Length: 474
Image (cartoon, rainbow, N blue to C red):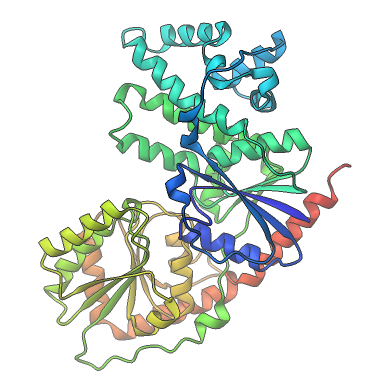
């Protein structure tokens, strides 16, 4: 079977939880061929693969969103009245308009992207929407918002893509949009997996952003929800990592009969056999963070917490373990903050390191993120028997406290996001309670053994792929 994995802003060029998940999925299914459709913002982000390509990856098909800036004007649209209506419905965010995607993707019908945006039909939609939405604001700003919103989408849809027996998008957004189009074009099944809720994540980013004018933030948010809901309606199966994400997906329109939860899985056998550090009674604590240095991981809150905790925990250390190159500016900000807080003798930024070498030396792991899905790092630490302090995001509470009464015990502490004082207090409690640390570590190890092993994760996807293709009408 040939499977096209459609990935936005991740594998193979960005290391992290989603990319590691993909690497595990592909390497565990040697019986299938995988084609990677990698959507990157720009060419500079795709200079170097962060992963060794598995032998069953037949190719990496790159598409670059910002290449739309190189577009020049060409032939205008040649659409029937029905095709024009359907396309304009999609651009107006109307429900059920995803059937327009194959038309938009066809240059012989929609024409050149720039020429289409200058067409009479599109201009009428633009002016009508402007009069309804914000007639008192600058029309010029409104026009350029529409242009920067739709040109990348049209450009991406009009790129060539490989054929496959099955299309698997690892998010909604542009990846889900392309998978929805390819399902319709080639008549092959489309599976959608969300590690977080893409539209919610974009909403949070836009609300906090400086690059979007306040008056246009709602339109951008609605745009990403529009793309996500179209993917939900088109996908033959939509998969969440845990019940919280599934609940949101159902609220946003995923048909219940197509909804499924498949938790992450990790190599429990290897990680559970790692030795544990045995500290002397007066030895300092070693706290660790397995984290990419990017703003969503909120490393700065962790640094503030370390400053507070270090005043009460003699000889403590904090190892921040993870790649630094994804957002060099943020990494430099974290280094500067560490110096400002006088943490040079406490905090070590190790860069990316083999976790099997570092985990045995760590007493407690900390996750300070402001947004997560079901973090692989937390599962890896739990499998190694290390207790956690996690912010209350994504499935972290479920991982540490269990999903129901059949999954008892606590594998760590949950704290509010962006609350260094609460985090520091839990760090102190961990320091003062070695027996509790040991208990939490054993609970985490048992939980991973019962629910989060690679074999279950891979076996479920293997069955899902086979059922999707075998049940597809020829």
